[in-house]
Length: 59
Image (cartoon, rainbow, N blue to C red; front, side, top):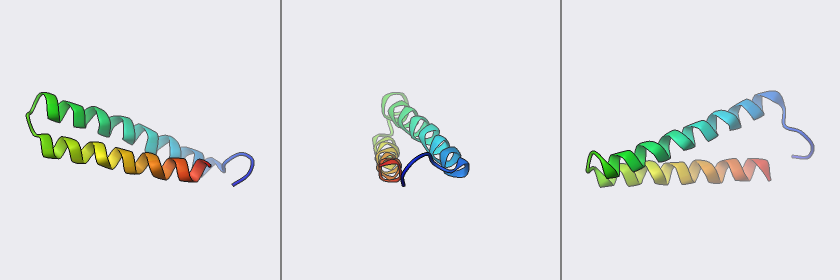
């Protein structure tokens, strides 16, 4: 895409970034406090995949 993003695409990317932050925070919390390493790591992996999608759509 060249130029600015359409409004709906910008909102979608913003919500995806918010989900990334929530997934990373939740994953770290699961690993540190609840001692559920597998679920925490899966949440962080999901955040990395979403971040990759955001980078693809913005580049």
